[in-house]
Structures are given as C-alpha cells and as structure tokens.
Length: 212
Length: 400
Image (cartoon, rainbow over all chains, first blue to last red; front, side, top):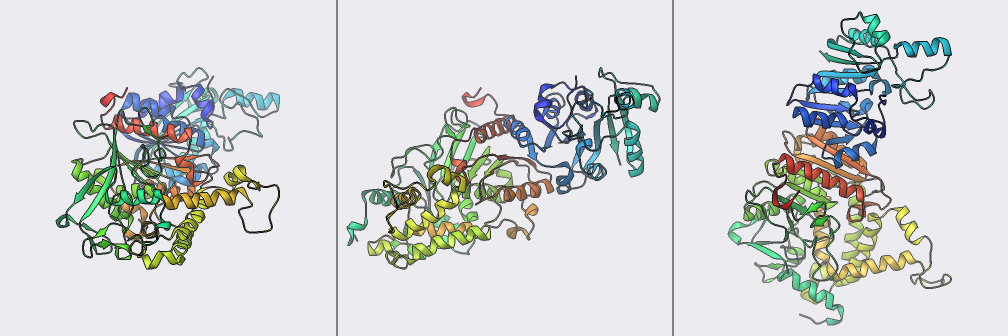
C-alpha cells in the first residue's frame, strides 16, 4: 500500500502516507523544519497546512525539486550525504529524514549531521526485521519484495537497510537520545505496548524522534 | 556634429534620441542629490529611466523590481522604441504571465551606465557641456543597485515584494539582497553568480578590445567626432553572443549548413549559416546600443564579487537575511554554470536562509532565461505566489 522513498512519482501517488502523518504529529506548531529527501513535498505541505511550520526541503531528484518550488515550497536540489555540511549547528527545530536513510551512502555520517543541524531529529525507515522480509529470505531464499520494499535488489536505491534493533543500536552507539520510537504494522497501525522484539517482527516501518 | 552622416543609420538616430529624451518615464535627481559611487566619484546630477506595468496597491506591497541584463533595457514588456521589437521578457511579464501585471506592480529601470535614458557615458557631462565619453566614472553593479534604491525611494516603496533578473540582472538581485536586506522580501536570481569568473572577464576583455581597436572609437570620443565604432562593437557582440548559446543549440540550429550557396567559396565571405547569423546579430546590436555603455557595463560586471566585499566569505553577505530566495540555473549554461548558483545556495544554507534552488534542463545555453522554458515560468509563478501569500497579498489586486 505504501510507496517507498526516493522517487517523487511514487511519493505523489500516496499523499497520505501514514508515516508522514505520524511525523507531522511529532512536529510542534510554528517550528522550523528541514525535510531531507522531501520528494514532491507531501510532508512539507501537510506541515504548512496543518501546523504553520516554516518548512524547507532538500531533494535529490531535480524533477521533485522543480515540482515543489512550483507549488511555492522552499526546496533545493541536494544530496543528504554531501550537502548537510553547509548548514550551521542547530539551524532547525527539526531535521526530518523520512524513508531516506536506507538510501544514503553513509547513514551514520548523515545521522551525525542531522543531530548537529536539528535540535530534534525525526527518522523513518522500512523495517528490514519485519516477518514478511524474514520469511521471504528464509523460505524463498530470495531478496524480499514487500509493499515498502518493492524493488529488485539490482535496481533498488536502498543500499543500507536495517532493522529497528539495528537502528536503536546505532543511536546508542552515537549517544543519540531516543525520545520516541513508533513502529507501524502493514495497516499503518501503531504497535503500542509491545516488547522491542515483537515490534521488530511486526513493524513494517518505524518512526524515531531523536535528540542529543 | 554630423560630419560623417553615412556612419549613422536611421535606427542609430532614433537610439541617440533615447539617451536624452527616452520614451519611458524618467526621474531626475538634481546635482544636490548625486549618486555616490564605489570608485569615490559622485554622479551628479543623474537620471533613472524606467518602465512600469500594473498598479501599485494601497500599502505598496506588490512591487516587483525587474533588473535587466548587460544589453537589456527597461522595455521588459513593451515595444522597443528603437527596434520596434517586443519587450525582452514578454513571455514572463504581463497580464496572466508568471509575473502577473494584473496582480503585481512591475518596475524595470535602465541601469546607470546604460544608453536608454539613465545616465551613462553618452549622457551630457554638466562639467563640459559635452557627452561624458571616456570621462564617465567607472561604475559597479552596486552603484547600479544604489541608483535603483533611489528610484524606489522616489516611488515611496520601502520593500519590494520581489526583485528578479537573469545574468547581470541576477547579479544585481544578489547585490540587492546583500546591500538592502530589509528592502527585499524575496529574490529570484537567475542564471548568474556571486562573482564574475575569470573566463567571463576574459570574454569581456575580448569584446572591449574589439571596440577600442576600431579607429572610429576615437579614444571614446566618437560622439564628438561624429563617428561610431560599429565594426568593433559588432565583433564584440558576435563573440559575446556565442557565449550566450550552447554548442548543442548552435549545432541544432545551423550545423555546418551553408548560407545561400551550394558549396564553399574558398574565400572569407559568410559561407556558413552560423557566420551569417552572427554577423546579423552584431550589426543589429550596433543599431540599438552604445559602444561606451558596452565598455562600462561589462567592466561593472567584471568588478562584481560579493564575497570580496564581505571579508572574502560569501555567507557573510547574507548573514541575518530574512529574504526568501529562489535561484534558477540551466543545465547547458556554460557562462554561468549551475555550480556558481550552487555556491550561492551553500552560502545561503550557511546562514540558514530560506532558499529554493531549481536547475532547469535546457539545451539553449545561457539565453534560456529569455526563452520559452515552461519550467522557468512554473517556478517563478509558484515562488512568487507563495511570496505574495506570505506577504499577505493573496487575492489582492485582481489576483485569484
């Protein structure tokens, strides 16, 4: 049901992506936000319409950027791996990376930069620990295809997939404080009051709110 | 004066008329209100000729300032008084256009140093009673912008909704944003850079040398001598014109096609269509432009380096800015390549400015900003619409 990150076409196909709504809930009204990998600007539009947020975006695809700017959104063409270094420390109340971290070349470096430029950081990603993923690899013996990971291994931009546990371990290693962690199942329902290993098994995607 | 009337076409006479008596509106600043220049000189008195389109709203919040390029002028959306051709940006400015004159009040001034009614080297020097010629002080883009600020003072407008321009116009936009932060609500620099590159200075120098090598330039005193360095200026334009296009655009348009002939003539006539095209570009340019203005304005561009004016750090120029920026570049522009715009974007990021940046895929080279580029129009329309909303202008002045 949900499209993956990376192409604006895919993102525009589903303007009401659940993780975006969940992210929007985490953003305090009137705050200053940088959305990295903003696609066609779906999240920026939600934030501007509902939360009166001063939103900026970075998007890799030029088509996505042009589409955003033509709608009046403040977006530049740029690469999460290389272009975050140009921003000053704590320039934003929130730095958001929605379903993009798994497509970066150096996720740890990107996360470091996010924690530097944002007072809070929101990261969402597809959970590679989901039972469907595990099952396909275990029983089918092939790279998994799911709603959140629909592409073939040879054409996917997702080069650094991780599980919820993996991501928590990285946060721990980097000394990032996890303020909130929400796993969503395939229906977009929040998995609440479940142990971590259960969330890691049934969460199709996860949204983290981090700070330093 | 006219000892050599053969050197003057009818168009040229019409052009000279525009220097002293332009068809557009002019504001004259008396000697007591001279313009201090970066060089230390003071231009006094001075005039700014300008065109306006649309209506200024009651709270004076809908003004969009259009800055023209090197050889442009104030006739952005009206018939040129010398050439009779349509305005140079009629695709962009007009009723219902991206810069919608039903909604915005558009002002386009001729730069100082120009030759369409703002004070320039062919204007009368009050000290001598003759044209300034080579005695005109060297000006900078900051001087041009300073003169425009005086025009806004005269119009009683504190802050523009937006300032927009391409090429040298875009450089002026950046200068506006750096020099008058509080007066610029939003800025759209197109196909430009925060400094003139070595290569660009080199091309300009070729052009200037071509003008000055023409004996009819007369050390800059050609007006007094009743002459005009037509050949030199035409060659300068031919060389410059190549830099406004792309290899691909030239090849697509002309290839190696021959001009009105079946085979090459083994001579130096314009065998190739591209040669004929360039010669035409050169000659028609001379009809509408002044040679000394060309020297002075190219010099102003060469001196342009915003970072150098701010301790060598471009970001310093924009520190604390509240302006919303939208930079636009074109993939095939090798005169002002995308990288130069990106440097400005990075400087703006460094001060956490509100910036959009669009690179448009086009094979038309630098001139793309003047041509039919739907993505350019969508970008400008969308960005201006958002700026107008932010400024509380939505729905005002006949807009939707």
